[in-house]
Length: 293
Image (cartoon, rainbow, N blue to C red):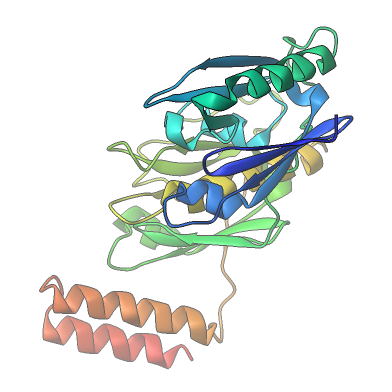
């Protein structure tokens, strides 16, 4: 192929073995698209291609990925809103014939048994390092391990007692992402269990030290979903060794990152100004944080 099809919020560049999707970064584009920037989708990662009528004089070219081919869509588990689906290209209705041509070209490029789940990820995951702020913690992933640093104002007593957490990728079996657009949105790390283990109940996300919970303005889709996808891809790529017991490793003691301390003090100040923290509590906790520098 080798041609370009420009739509609303994205442009698809058709190559001989893949489609390069470049997402628009304008103010009206979904924030997830802006965060993804661009993605190369191999033809072998696609299950099907459809063209349908859209809203307000548009048509929609939709490429459906094979199950297991894309860590982003695997982590999303069907929870993305239609407008945020990165495999949908919305076009003005006058481009319907052109869109149908490219849809036919893509269909002819699908591999045999395209409906079967992929045995590995075929689409690249977002690259580490990544981090985002949840309601009760700051989550960070450096490519080798995931860390949760609790916010004293948001984390449950169970999480505070457990301490800040670090999870090596080799200790994980997967990721559970529940969209922040729903009431109990969260990101939970799933532990690898030793052979013969019957597993364990993780309990509610707000009490599980292997989870961070979302809230209004905390852990938005465009930050938490790429994070979940990157961790999931690392688990699939590097988690194939022998089973090991789950361990949560407290964050190292000693001198803290000044940027992290500053962020915690800003968060504390927001709560103080909102009247959720008293003057005495604010002064005491601020002094405690400054002492960690």
